[in-house]
Length: 336
Ligand SMILES: [Zn+2]
Image 1 (tube, rainbow, N blue to C red):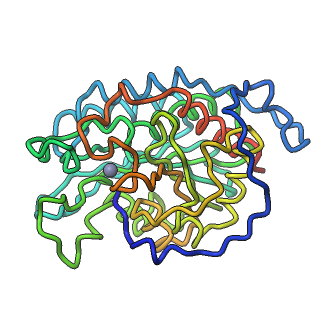
Image 2 (spheres, helix red, strand yellow; image 1 turned 90 degrees about the vertical axis):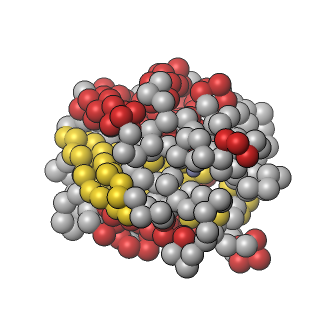
């Protein structure tokens, strides 16, 4: 993904309905989560070690760059893994043209739970990794593909762990886990920018949002995870998420606060990110939020190793996977 607009466009009035806590990082257990909000909600225990192992399995293939063997092998791994957990798994194959004219063979992988339930939500992340480390401090690496342990694999790892939980304990809602392909093949810094450059990102979700995996697919809302595994990550309320789905953002951030994760989920407006949720909001009208790390101290606006060769497994932190995983799991199981 990439940033879309300058900061001056990002001033958005938000009336916060809940207060900000700045407590220490809480290490909640499943037992503590069971009766949040006073309701008797049984939430299965999200396991960050398990999520981490799913991140590691993806990066072990090497960079998941479209049209490569590693990409193909990882697609099979993800399908097989999800087939072990979900009621149905569908692979949506499609082709899109990259910024340089390359025809990319994409696969969106869609795992469904409770497929007959019309009340649905979807959870998503992108599973491809970027072909270019075009923000690496060493210019010699700019055309080298990245592992994308955080940029891609972290969100997928959390969602596979959630799939494992959904098999053990059904949620009330229908749930679709959608792993988008071709998110990160956008115009690199070293290529000329064109009027169409913005549309070279998030090709898999662009395709899906115009060609859903079945006609008239609908969900009450969607949550996208992107870069959710770095140490001490912070998630601000991203601009397009607040524009299209402010109540979903507030509910998720409130759940995070209730679980003691307000030092990850900051009650601050973030900048706008051109990520999968942007095209989904624009094309499919399913209100969709993006939980994505922002760091205004970084020139890129993202986390330290964004689009560098250091976006690797060594820089994935289980505590962050745990925080995001617990929040999303709680959101899924409290929804009815
Ligand atoms: Zn990226």
